[in-house]
Length: 178
Image (cartoon, rainbow, N blue to C red; front, top):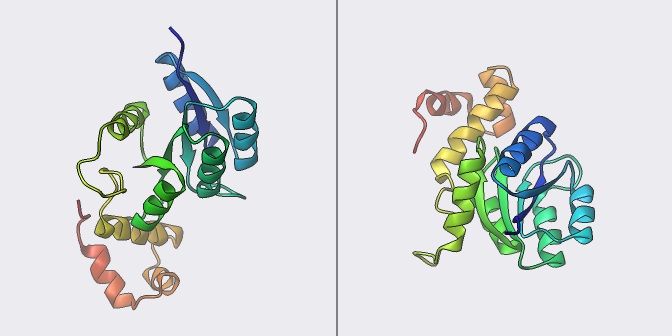
């Protein structure tokens, strides 16, 4: 029985190697790349059946990798993996050739489930992955990520987000939406 091939593309070396080990333990033939150029080079050498691409990477981003991998081999099943999710980027990833969109943190079981879901016929005409976060959830996560980047300084986070400080304080006090 031949192994299914997988290309992992993520600039986080520890996360990428951990995922590679987990997929290899499950019988996959895994190659990994730390940036867009390395990923495209590996795909041109031998096109993978599956690919998992991180959205945010230094240099060329994940959407460009999705576009390039799809151009090399349209049959490659590509998942976009990111901790910075939004509905707009999910739609753009699907438009460029991805079959799904998975939010971090994700493990090998989450990714295998996403590949399996993408193989099923769609229940609706919506191109967005069923596990994509709601718009409210994506906004909440973004606000908290910016707040963390500002070391908890609400005034600075409000300035970066372009909202009034008091409006931001109200949003911060809300529980995370589903």
